[in-house]
Length: 121
Image 1 (cartoon, helix red, strand yellow):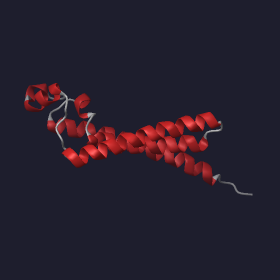
Image 2 (tube, one colour):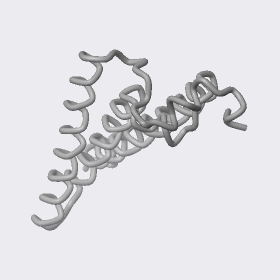
Image 3 (spheres, one colour):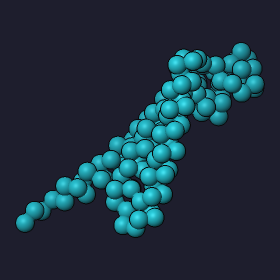
Image 4 (cartoon, helix red, strand yellow):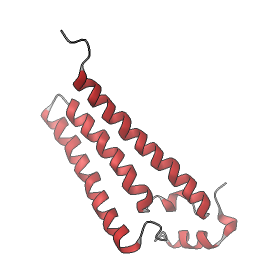
């Protein structure tokens, strides 16, 4: 008789690590946006945030797909994980083209980056 459900521990570890990565990506983004003096909402589109955040959400989806009891529930988690994977691929292509610290593409974000009076408080 085994007292510890090791597959259950692994499933729960995945979602905890995934959400920890997502939270760390959010925290790093807020710090980065503050240092660059741009609004967080404009920095959300940067690959600096999108790639690690989506990696965390993929781990979360894997965990929930692994623990799903119905076939359609598992399918939906896999589909959502595939969407996050697609966002990572698109983000990596953007990084390859423009780099990690590419300026935000939103017009008011570019103005905010040059206007220090519009910084985050």
